[in-house]
Image 1 (cartoon, rainbow, N blue to C red):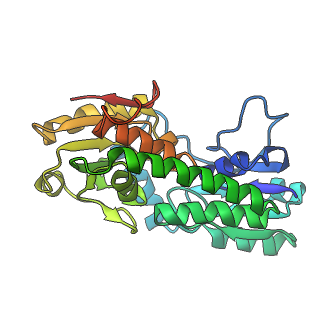
Image 2 (tube, rainbow, N blue to C red; image 1 turned 90 degrees about the horizontal axis):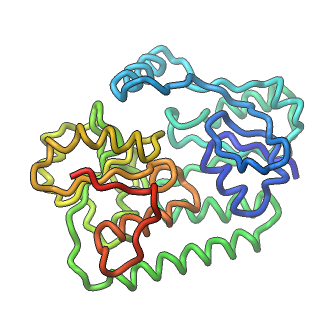
Length: 294
């Protein structure tokens, strides 16, 4: 089985299933273990937004989408040379990865025999379902089932630890300029961690809002987890969020590792949020994953 992953979360699923040796193609944003052979070929590129402010990134994305242009470029020649059996892609978010219709077009044009599997979860439960789907398509359903069972056991342990405890009102800021409340599976993470999600979009696409609307939800805890950023970038942006929420705790989270990528590490996100909300009931979050800003 020769696998190509066109989104970072799928790459993480592939490695969690022990299929790293079969991964031959990835995107420029995928995280590949340093010791992983010579490394898979990068078949999807995109603009390097490092050094751009959140507002500048938002303007760039809006401009590209308004012009009908893709944010990512599929290197068709590289893809054809890999002769993949299975390509993992998505239609969930055009800002996050190349859409599945572009991949289907490329596969047809190249005469490629690969199966294209689109992973489009909107809830935490559906994320677990995508792991099973990848395992089935890659021929390792038992591994996938064991992985999901382990993730469910970890979720159950957190649930038991926070059961019956007061639930703080929690808003997740997924972007800061303009502000976005957390969508998709993010409210599920807060709920599973023993919080009450507010000002979010459970099971739906995140959408721009205003600081006034977020403040009106009266959050006691604000988690800043901007898509595409690690902890240091999130902390820098969280500092700009603090004035909008006087009296609330404001925390920065490593969004890529814990919150926004629909893979196994979302369970790490649940554990980290639980450690913020219930520090006397669950183990502390690992160093470098969360930081209190206010």
